[in-house]
Each structure stands twice: as C-alpha cells, then as structure tokens.
Length: 200
Image (cartoon, rainbow, N blue to C red; front, side, top):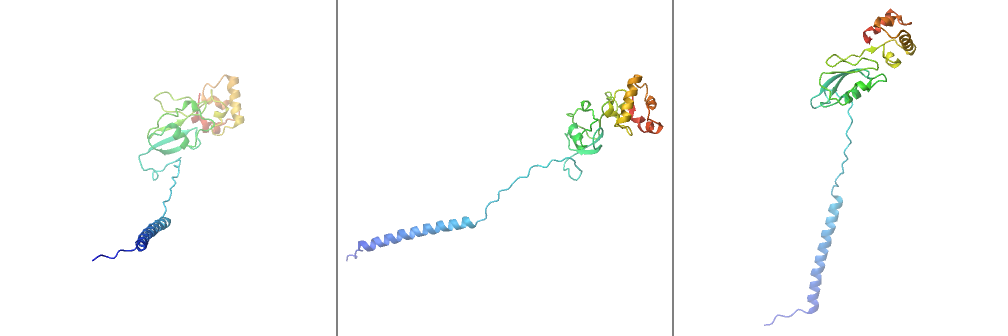
C-alpha cells in the first residue's frame, strides 16, 4: 500500500519553520549574552600610588634593621637619626636638615656609607680638619676663620666678628686662644662661653 506523498508546499513550510526556529534561538542566545555582559560587574582599573619619600624614620616605621647616626656640627637640626643600612653621609646630612651657611662642605665625603653608632661631625668653615685616627673637632680656628664662621660662636655677632678679624690682621694673628680677650667686646663671661669651641 503506498504512503501518501506530502505536497511540496507543506514540505517547504516545515523547512521554513525549522530554519526560523533556529534563527530565533540564535538571536535569543545573542540577546542573553548581551544582557549578561551588560549587567556583569566590570573590572576596576587600579592605580598605584607613587612611593612616599621618607625623610625621618622611627623604630615603629622601619621593618628591617636600622643604623643610628649622631649628626652634629654645621647642620640645621643636629641630633640622633635612624637610617636604613647602606645610607650615605648625604642621607644623614639631609635627615639633619641639611648644611648651614657656615658648613665647610669640602671637608665632608658625601658618598661615604655611614656606620651604626658613628658620630658624623660637619665642620664649620675655618675649623681645623681632624687628623686621621683622631677624634673629630668642631672648633673654630680664630686665626683662619672668616666672619661667617666666627658668628657661629655663642654671642659673636657681625660687629664683633669684624673686630676679631681687624685685631688678627693688625696683630699678625693670635698666638693662643687667650689672646682673644684682648679684642674689645670680649669680656670674661663671653670668653668663658666660647673658649671650648675655639682654637689657634
């Protein structure tokens, strides 16, 4: 017995329905993908803060080993400073507020690595450099110091510094620190305040 054959129109309609259903499914999948991507949390682009320059450190702020350096002499803020290992003299001077106007920077090796427990003395202009192996000195040499260096002494202002220079020139220098008492304006009290900070 022969099966009834489908008409060409009915077969074509079924093919078109199948294709149409497939297109609808594809479009539906695409729409779902768009919606998911639209409502999904977006990634946050982070920004990295630049490193903060550290000028002074305390035991609580340092995680690793540290070194203590005592900076004295012709710096703006003499004192005891805690520095990370490997820091140099220039770092210690910067921690102490930098050089004063009377500092003799030519006598300071800024590139030297500091060591734990050392005392770093920044000499003033006119001060005698320390001999190798001796203790550093921060005394002002009254025979070689200029007016700026003399004014670093307690109680010595511009006028008195100029009188010292004039006396030194007219008398050929000072043979001892006691000769400074011969300069007008330097009495016993003023001399006692500066005698331990001067030399000839």
